[in-house]
Length: 311
Image (cartoon, helix red, strand yellow):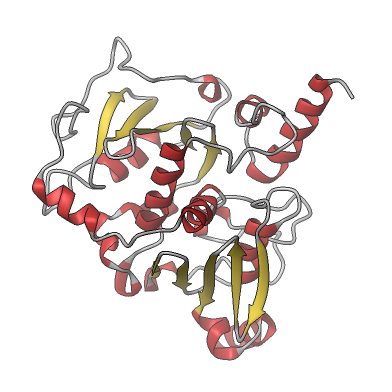
């Protein structure tokens, strides 16, 4: 089959899950064009994605210390991830709001994610660089023109807000200390956590599962748990052993499906039902998916019945 046909077929398969424009999906394909490319990236980019997973999936009462970074609030916006080899695009209808949730100061410090700096800031996009990993992150408008955007240096009309730290602002002792509290990850665990992040806003084309930004479930997804995100989330562990704990949507089987789906999953990842939870394995790494309702009641149907009785 001609290489162009393979490329088009692979890009179309990817966008059916990701909701990307064709050019976005195509731009994320690796060189051989036969793999979806969500997990094909530089080591620097993978390290940033794993750190962003720690930032996004810790919140409120359940969360481990990175909950204080406040990045988890981006889930309230409609967004999607467009993973590239040396970049990660977050496409949203509210790029200004989302970028400020990621890169403006917290109440107790001059930064939000330790080491993250603003390279370029415009009304339609913000380019960020993480100093320790040297990786880029781009927050931009969700439209087809924006999908072609490449921004690796300040645009001529870039205008950083006064509370945004520029890339030439070095990391201070507090940042270095705070970043050091993030537990060590094995290479396999880093790959698995990075895979979790880039799959946080997918939906299966057959309507059997969705992660949908970890907010409200799409109406056409059967047996989806309701949104209970206000209770919190916790992604924590060390080396090869990690757990993700949360309440409500997405169902744990949906998260497991996103990571192990034969079309869009992480190649080599497997899932098994362990007790009342799911455990996703990738090489030596394990990620236990613990949705509280299912963990307590034992099955999705038991959870749905209990929730129905509460209505």
